[in-house]
Amino acid sequence: MIRFEDVSVTYEGAAGPTVRGVDLAVPEGELVLLVGPSGVGKSTLLGTVSGLVPHFTGGTLRGRVTVAGRDTRTHKPRELADVVGTVGQDPLAHFVTDTVEDELAYGMESLGLAPDVMRRRVEETLDLLGLAGLRDRPIATLSGGQRQRVAIGSVLTPHPRVLVLDEPTSALDPAAAEEVLAVLQRLVHDLGTTVLMAEHRLERVVQYADQVLLLAASGEPPMLGDPADLMARSPVYPPVVALGRLAGWSPLPLTVRDARRRAGALRDRLADVAPRQGTTAVRRPERPERGSRWARRDRTANGTPAERAPAASVAGLAVRRGRVEALRRVDLTVTPGETVALMGRNGAGKSTLLATLVGLLEPTSGTVRVGGAAPHRTAPRRLIRHVGLVPQEPRDLLYADTVAAECTAADRDADAAPGTCRALVSELLPGIADDTHPRDLSEGQRLALALAIVLTARPPLLLLDEPTRGLDYAAKARLVAILRSLAAEGHAIVLATHDVELAAEIAHRVVILADGEIVADGPTAGVVVSSPSFAPQVTKILAPREWLTVAQVREALAAAEGTP
Ligand SMILES: Nc1ncnc2c1ncn2[C@@H]1O[C@H](COP(=O)(O)OP(=O)(O)OP(=O)(O)O)[C@@H](O)[C@H]1O
Ligand SMILES: Nc1ncnc2c1ncn2[C@@H]1O[C@H](COP(=O)(O)OP(=O)(O)OP(=O)(O)O)[C@@H](O)[C@H]1O
Image (cartoon, rainbow, N blue to C red; front, top):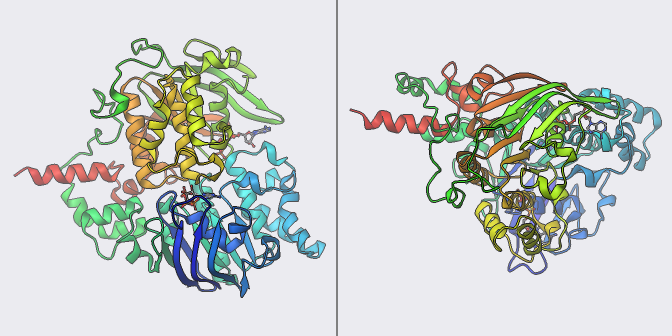
């Protein structure tokens, strides 16, 4: 259905091709999962199928890509619209109309479908993706995950034969992600739709893949094959595979269910060991990790010793956004050194709470204090000494023309030593060039830059909205290390996330929001272990014992082998 014939893409100014030697075919009626580290060229390869590369991105495409027999170089994206539906990483860039219902109908209108067909498909899609309650809403008022659902819905309604999806579940809550993947699988099985999808959170998707297309390193030819075979050699793999590799299981299980069946012997080996809380950040580190730039200072960002006064306190908070009561009766205290994961369904109010803590929204009632000040009444230049937010859309933070200029501005705004921000970028994700336009960065690279800009000011309260969108496992591990040493130094961290694996690794505490209210608040293991949606893979595999991460299991096995 999709044919790549000796394809390579070289962007202007790049030393060599970003993707090279792609010569393979994606068969009709299969779901093929594109896997690889951040910045390796996954979006680029997807773009050659939808025609966005090189028509919109620039660069040179060599070789030939055909979709249902049409050459994507000689057909403009809109001439492919009847066969290919594309969802990019940034849903906002994709919307053409103002409301949910119009957006779902738009693609069909441009293809000239009959009004009754359009009507029926819009209704079907609203139900399928849980959007019925939002049908009249202006898109501008939707939460991140709600937008992503609309973007997916809008490409489903015309029933294209091929779907090209770039991280379609990155902003979705765990249950919504499962629903969307089940819908896609049904299209593949029942209608013979062909799906080519890139995704970093392999724990969510690998079990749905008929084949995996692995881009292991930039410029290396990709490999197409059986998911379990390729997971055995891939540099990126989900926790279930990490556990399988650790335990020496072959073939590697890709689902929690398969892993549970194999886990008997592993459970026996772990029977006499209690999960140590120290491997995850559940127990606060007693001293900063050595060797990290983050640990060099033993005082908080504003130069005072870490104090025990709360980094943030919220009492009786309500926030109304238009017609929506986004938060109600919220009480929350975050102390220095504590990492809190804010979880909950799409639209539950997580971003609203972060925006209120950073003064972007005003409380409708109740009080919010950050470092003793009311954020919405504090001047931004003063506020950055207390609190910093990495927004869900890192783009919102980026204004300059180059990575270097962004970093210079960040150093200046934060009164940090020149080079501070740039060093952070390299620490998070090596290999980002100084003169790159932030627009041309890959999603993961852009997040690394936004994060570095905020961290430059070393705010005592650090807020992160979906910080692992677009990050591969290695970048995520580096982020975890950085956040842990910040917490150890006394920074308070609140992260809104759908990434249950991240919460298990790093959070001392999990707060679950539902419909604007806090419905659970407690130590991570206690909150996530009993939840089918929020439990990480290792927990599900080794239940009823409270193991959370592969790192915990690895440490326990090493200790058990070390003892006679
Ligand atoms: N329009 C462009 N002009 C120049 N360079 C680009 C452009 N688009 C992407 N690049 C570069 O090409 C490389 C691959 O980017 P791409 O977005 O394809 O990676 P990716 O594998 O999708 O990454 P991620 O997982 O972070 O989304 C990156 O180094 C990026 O900076
Ligand atoms: N500008 C706005 N006007 C009206 N309603 C809004 C506006 N922004 C957000 N909302 C609504 O407020 C509610 C909370 O949104 P919020 O973005 O805080 O959710 P969230 O938990 O961060 O969701 P997600 O996981 O999808 O990012 C949602 O129902 C959303 O549709």
